[in-house]
Length: 150
Ligand code: 4NP
Image: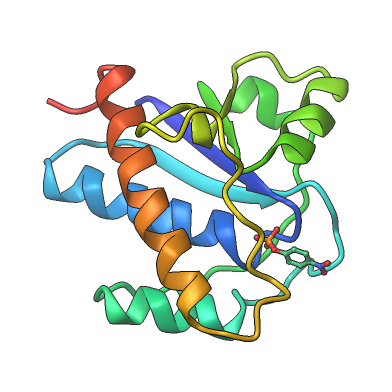
């Protein structure tokens, strides 16, 4: 089974949503994939996703309340076929750690390499809907480009 790891900084806002969206698309298409997410920092290790990510997921009929933040580990480079970073900082950090099967989310879905905006400091919920919509387009394109959808 092919596997994908989504990585952001805290693993509480963006990558938990990416994980959930990818699982939803895979399940809708009847495709078996191992999908997980992690953070380049351990600042929120063991925590649930942030409130606004839980809320935006719920608006799209996805429950992410059981996800727990974890730090990315070197083994992930071996365990996962694809590692997808949310922004340039995540990408460069992973590259320095020696990650090889590394991609940037914004290189898919027609975003010309843009970073998935870090919504952590947004007070407004609206930013999270924007992140959700961007992730949906990027992940759909990623899965198709990699031949992971039937
Ligand atoms: P994430 O968002 O990387 O999408 O999970 C953040 C979460 C926490 C922090 C920054 C970004 N933080 O500074 O603690």
